[in-house]
Image (cartoon, rainbow, N blue to C red; front, top):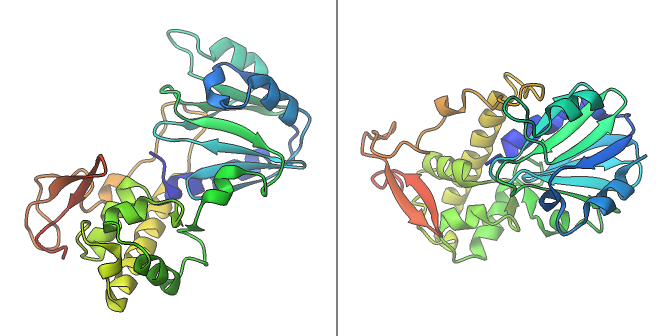
Amino acid sequence: MPEVPEVEAIARTLRPIVAGQRVRGVQVFHAIATLPQTPAELARSVTGRRVVGVSRKGKYLFVDLDRGLIEMHFRFDGQLIWLGSAKKLLQQANKKPDGVHVDVALEFAKGVLCFADGRHLGRVHFWESAETCVPLNQLGVDALSSQFTTDLLRRELASSRRPLKEFLLDQSRIAGIGNIYSCEALWHAALNPRRPANSLNDKEAAKLHKGIVSVLRRALECCLNPAPTFRDPEWWFQGLEKILRVYQREGQPCRRCGAEIRRIEQGGRSTYCCLNCQK
């Protein structure tokens, strides 16, 4: 699942491609991608609007328009694909065996931006303004923003009894951290993912803040080198596995103490950790 570093890299790469362009048309190939809005509602709201920027909060990508904004949520497997023209879209979209899967396509004068999710979990919606955008207003502080401070994290931790791993996945508290980077941040902070959030002292809260920020910044650097290539439908972020210390390393030795990395289940999701040195 794309988390804050991946979505931030997508936003930075997409911004110069679409900024200033006007949406000439919208094609919805799979109506499930726009639910609960209808394809007609999305097309009517977006067609003719000019892109003024691309922004992000948490795991959400926003294409900012001269009136309103398009919200994109990639969920587990969503991605963006850039095709050179509307003609190529009609030739390649959902055509077997060599075509590309496309759910929603935004046509511009200089190309077509396609949102694709073969599992049909990702969503594309239009909102009249940031104030009316329900997902945006349900998010807590962004994990990569300057507002995410040690003091803020300390206050949020103190108000929650949830296990640390589940606390970090709560997007209403800290937006953008998912399964991968929550595991990694807790390892860097040497904290047990099952500890209650409000059990941390000030020193431990500061270590967790440092772990979150350093892991996300390093992952963002990886995600930008090389930057996303929307023209290749098979492209995905490379090199992230080199910076991971626990995620999907079950049975391998901990790189800090040498004990075996364990996989435990929390809230129906896998948590990877070292139960020897994460206290």
